[in-house]
Length: 140
Image: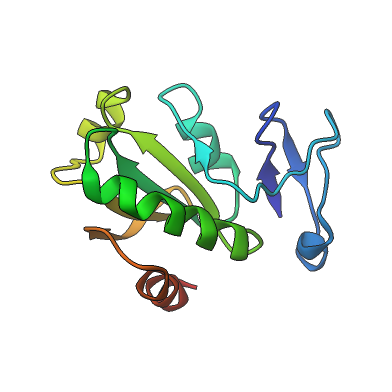
């Protein structure tokens, strides 16, 4: 499986059976699977979308959004729990308006699931941990 390093963005090959062993980047030595959601920008979004083989779960959010703030710790908690099954990321729609327009984000928070470089599913609105886990279980 190919995984993008969250620190140096190098592409690493990791056998699927070794995902639970905290694999490290061959270039910089940082763990390839982050326990925290990645902050994606226009600069690195396509690299994760096109090169990383884990399904990508993106939380489109904004700093002024109350439900986004309420859901942030839940998203981080589930990201830590499921880091070997999904890549979790956040896109700040205020700073990354081009990405918000590209994916027609009309309300926030919006979670989008990308698989093999294409959007596979989307859900709008804040979720608690149980609903988020259930949505992801249906996707895997």
